[in-house]
Image (cartoon, rainbow, N blue to C red; front, side):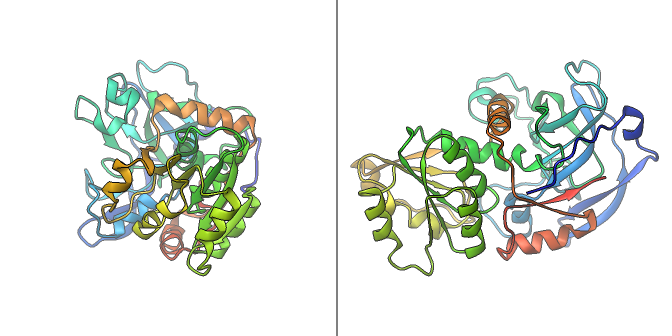
Length: 364
């Protein structure tokens, strides 16, 4: 777990001492990261200039370096990576209310959308009726830089008990993990299988246990399964090395889990989910996004063998319940800190499955 801190930053200490900053930027022309010196931006109306405390790495960032057919589009080139972070308010743009310089804040990456249409409130900002949404780290500069612009409407002041450095993963991984479990709509005592026990899954296990569920962690990396145990999983299985894991899960649960919640980017992991779901009563919750489209048996769906539910990575309208739940139940990410220049190493570790929990850059 990341170390906690009660550090208070004064507004004056947060202000930039120069007009440029270091930023880790992805360049489509060579498909590589470059540590560039770029201008420090100024906030426009409804925006905050934030001194970054921590930016943590998400698998979606790593997808930049992989071929994919899931609609991952960059809006500028080069673009600063990172869409998961926390920091200190430096300056608020005109029309912004509820924030003061020095406030410790977390935020989600949507920019330029209206935040008020049906899609923004009930689906996702990606589908804003204005068609103008940008996502930090993809369509516009993200958080692996010293100062970042965030939309105040997608930000919140952190609860006092949450550490500004250690809480960065909550603002993507946490919100995603929380709603993946909550959207399954299980009752205390029911069985949830968490598929993928890494950056998202280890938090999902903690949330599921706090909600009173019985949890089975499934992964192909033993270190991730160790993290699953640490987070309170009742049982764990390596689906690659344990050839009998399906039968064991059916025996433990009396026929199958009530929900299989998949946080992986593995199509093979999705292919294996139906076998462990309780027939007629179970659900497959789709959270992780593989490089390839999913293949499902239409007969299983039509005949009601299981139901399929989608659970997205959160909006400003469902961010606060996750953060407040995390504070109330003292749920903290397993976070390892690095320096900004070490981002390539972080990406390599995640790509090779060597990361336990979440990896983040700490800005001091």
